[in-house]
Length: 202
Image (cartoon, rainbow, N blue to C red; front, side):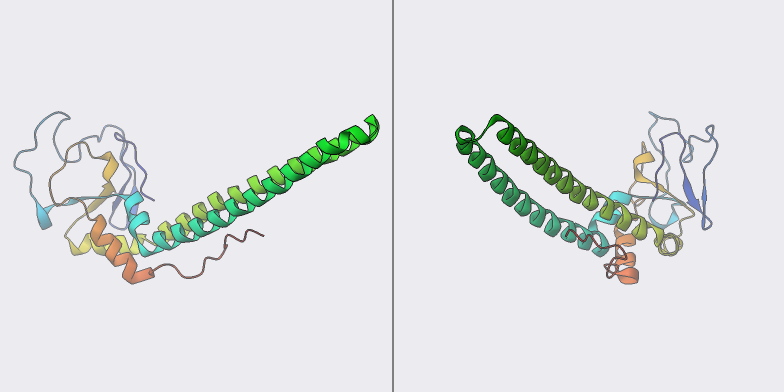
């Protein structure tokens, strides 16, 4: 994944990831706040940018991941509603039975109910966390297979350096190759196929 601070840009150049020293802050040869004049456009640009979040989100791979998470989230919410209804029913039962129970018996029943409710809460929170872990795992798998394809796209447009679009303060038309990269990745890896670590929310 192409992550870069504004003044310490990690760049993809000649097939390798290179982080230039802090003093190399103006790769386009202009100072912040100055207008860009005489900048080359289109295929002549050696510097290209990419939006890695859009790259993932709009790719077939990212859309498949989003759909799987959405389906699992809906199922989890339905399960949460059912469990909440069951716990509420049990709580009302204990309230009604309290008058006919000894203090010791009611305390034991209340403690058991609290333990049950806490177990449910913890289990459901763990399931929610699995959705987060699934997305993180799939993102790593996606970006782990993008380098060669991005290099090919960069070469095809005559670019030499690829940086994160968020590191650009001023740019010119034609710098961004995100759309072309999405198309190339869709053709190369598609939706990624079955994930090695599926969500699996029992």
